[in-house]
Picture 1 (cartoon, rainbow over the protein chains, first blue to last red):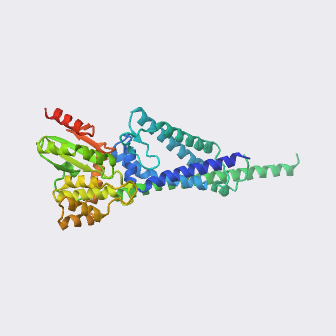
Picture 2: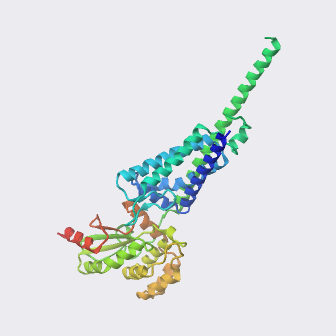
Picture 3: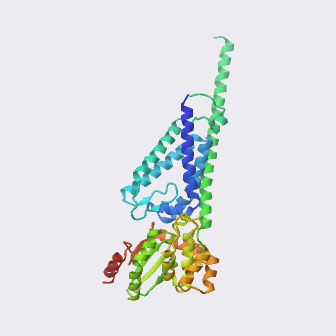
Amino acid sequence: MVRPWLGTAARLILAGVWIVAGASKVGDLAASGRAVNAYQLMPFDVAQVVGATLPLVEIVLGVLLLVGFATRLAAAASAALLVVFVAGITSAWVRGLSIDCGCFGGGGQLEAGQSPSYGPEIARDVAFLALALFLIVFPRTRFSLDALLTGDSRED
Amino acid sequence: MSKRVGQKQAARVVRDQISKEKRRRRTVWTSVIAVAALVLAGLIGWGIYASQKAGSYNTPRHASGGATGVSTGSGHVPVDVYLDFMCPHCKAFDEEANAALKQLVKDKKITLAYHPVAFLDSASTTKYSTRASASFACAADGDKAFEYASALFARQPAEGGPGLSDDDLIQVGGTVGLLNPTFARCIRSGTYTSWAAHVTDAASGRGVTGTPTVYVNGKKTEATSEAIINAVKAASQ
């Protein structure tokens, strides 16, 4: 059966994405708040809180996926976050803002001469979203804590 | 069907139900634990951020309104410049527009404020943006903030490196006449480190997301001497 192995691959890729994304922002939570603020979607105070909470949540989400604990829930949370990110980037694009998405650190307004790359950023997030959706539908994967806990070796 | 087979089947149905119930309960518990971990992570992040946030700060001399920058001049038109000492375009701006801004201040046309934000702390290994911003405030205490800003830009460090050391920051002050030991003490003791965070938060709160950003009379203006002069003209009519 190939599907549980595909699931393991999807889980590990998504885990890597979250851990790298979270780790790149966790060192400067104030900068993370400014990156959120640059989207101009919420008041600065709210953006600061969102920016401060996001990196550690991303890391924990990555760890959950890495060990395969509560896989379906972690995948659903991933999908929800990714939908929000895609919506945010799209809205920045539509409003003609010139910002860095701040997905993996950085963020804020681009310097003169730099142009935003909203298209590739959205495409990348949609690809991650596809992995998350796969895991929501098929949460049983190899090498997961879930399988260990349920003692479930059934092929399905 | 014999009685015994029927009993066996019934027993299996019960076993299946029990194991299904067990699995369901395990799913509920793993979900609860996972959600708790995610919520806890968010709260910890918030807590760390809240504890880092600039609560109180020292206000330097010549501070602009709200202590969000350092100002000079007595003209009617306010010109606010948001810059980061690590940002190459800010260096270019200061070099290009400095003379024109000085003239406008001298002619009593504008009140000029520099807001040294620390957006680019991650571009150096020593939070150079914050340290340079704080040292700018130290220079303001010595009445040489704007001269010091230009001197700092002239020595702008490369991105990714350690930036200028405290000794270097003090030595740059010496080149513009900041020879008083209080200036060196101010830098070494981090007197204005939390002020730099205050300036940065205030800038973000105003909607500044990049540097350099210039406002003339409260209106966002292109960061060139020509655009600023025109905007000042328009505002003073």
